[in-house]
Length: 268
Image (tube, rainbow, N blue to C red):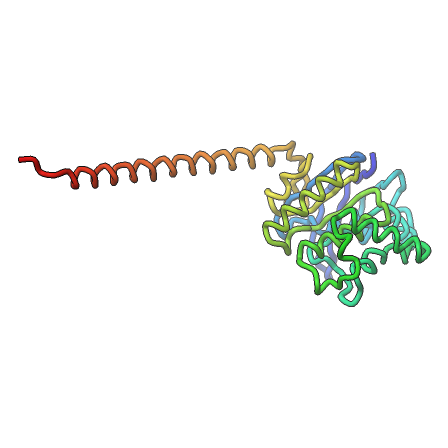
């Protein structure tokens, strides 16, 4: 078990008012899994991602990451756990605009105190892995949205984390770029990377091998029904398109037949 959350509760405290956000959340993830957590805005999914990412603490509950008891550590130790184990991919890329793609990817290695030569070699290899070996010197402003997200994924992977955490990774992308990014996540997962993705989109969740719903701070297993629903929707759309094509063909045939009858000479 690479990740184990048990009985997580979290509320935000504003003055005398407590606003519950997460309710008795339990989530277990095995190494190599591809898990999507799906929910609408305000469902608690971002708060859950912050807790999983060692960026926040719950009011109660336990969290084990690679066998380490996360919440028993102080903030500095939690930061070290985060650096060693987690790679983050954000909706809006979070790239440094004045740094090249190579420098952006190498940034986590600076914090990990990796020597400069090794940093550059590993950052270049990470960019090549995501298909950007010819863009290492480009600034973010010279890259498309899809390319920026590839840089962000390379940065997330450069420190060889145990888990790749993606928060709405296609939210700022067009449909073509979104497809490319999801294919890249799928490829990384097939190579053994554990992927945990937050999304509100059924289309994006359908790429995962396992889907969990979160609503009003309560999480539940979807048991793969998103994939089944997507397949049923695609089939229904295909059948509707085929029926429409047949109707158009029939109408065209009727019009052509009518025109031919009008053009026949009067033999009387």
